[in-house]
Image 1 (tube, one colour):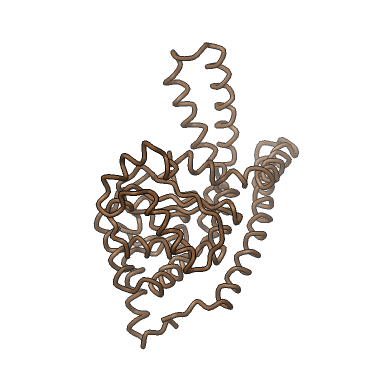
Image 2 (tube, one colour):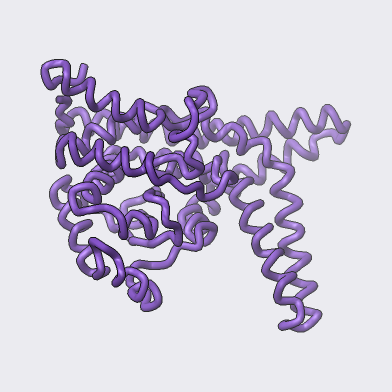
Length: 327
């Protein structure tokens, strides 16, 4: 079985660090190239080239730090300690106390020697899944679905946590969040502004006309501008390797054993419920595909970021069948 020693982890960290800077540079370059194409097509001189350059630089300097908060808002995730959430969690089969969940997470942090600060949120969905986002030591946000808390026994819950913590200690999450916060940002802004407009329209009779038209114009503008940049979001998954999931699975196996990890994956396959197809620009941040494509289809590796659940199980089994060594 593959051992993830300090040198292996250190090398992975360096690769992800360099890759993060490459993504930032490529985002500016691709944005400007797209602007040039629009200028040529629409004969607008250099208007779109400058506009796309300003957007890409602004997003890197200011937008990246807000990526996690925006994703939390989009998922409608609630902080684990909130009172209304306690009432839901107390009916869980395995974890009825938020403090117990935090203690388990702290235990896993100690085992993997992770000193990062991690906020825990809960996503209102019965599917078994998790999402991890963050770019700095004090910026990580771990989102667990209701289904994860309600349906997983301790060892399977730990299997999921070790998988996610592998992404933290190797800086996979830093890299993946950067991808979502750059190339994925137009779709993220479009989704948030679209949702905001729907809420504004619903509450039209509850606010003054001035407030309604002000907010409607602001979010309509944001929505319209983000549409211009949506083609950039289509490139998001080209920068993510499926190998990351195999490695994180094996790290989890090293810590909780093969049976717990395989049982977790099988349980996900048997009870998967789709979240939202529009999450494609950040699906690489999830433990398993948020739209269950790794359950129902043989995914296209050129445009997807996940191996199938069966492939993940097969990889674990194969790793053990070869004299307990991963080549």
